Image (cartoon, rainbow, N blue to C red; front, top):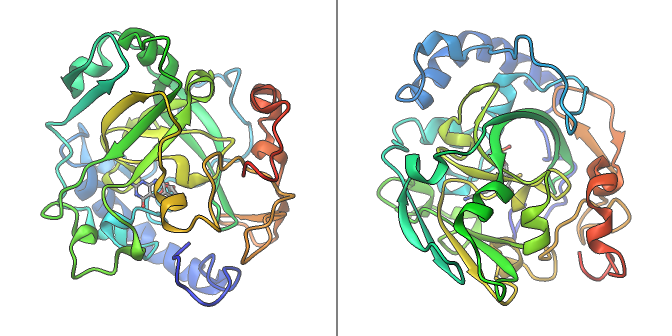
Length: 319
Ligand code: MTE
């Protein structure tokens, strides 16, 4: 999704199958070390991070029963430009990042604004495992078992004022800790900090999570430790990582990819296979680890849960 890349995405959207399999062989031996290094502070036993499963998990109301993308792929094929623009860079360049201690500032049109210590922010909220399909705007997808809590539960706890119509999220801005933010890095042409936003009804939708983990484990740095947004019916770029600020506002906030390339990215970013990206089709996708492409579904298959929020809106215009 580099904004000034001349070529279209299909050739580069995904590692070629051959390289992919070689990489997997390499990853098999290296992933335990990588994952452990990335999450070492947060995990009780480093070696457990290699191939976690979800033993005994009953499929929940919102879970897809599609095959989960292997942990090693979920944690080594990432977009997190604060740690580099290559898919393999976030895992490598975030190894020494220490997500804790962490604070989240709650600001704006809300009854309980404060700078919350991470533990206080999530206190009393019920964690759930949710297996979601995730679709990146670059036409690849994954199935990820997230661990997190509904954003709606936090919003209720924070008590926004009736005038709050949107929620704005901001990622940590710390070039000393996030090498991709240093001027010496190209950084994909993004302006820091990374920002995103949701309309209040989207933020309150039961599908919307704040994730603090995946595969039942603490969130690896490269996936947005310690806390990130997950909206499975939207393209992946809405899933802002390593959130340090949540602000309740009355006007549509800016979001980084729209601010960077307004002709290519919108605010809503709903997965809509009928609206092409200006440089490539969105009609199909490649599930990571699979060879053949599959058809992309409207709202990424979550129409039943989310379509009503957009009734009356022209989703070709409001992309
Ligand atoms: N959040 C921040 N702060 N910086 C980023 O570069 N990339 C986005 C999103 N959140 C990004 C971000 C994009 S483009 C995608 S596809 C998802 O994170 C990828 O999440 P994953 O690496 O956990 O699969």
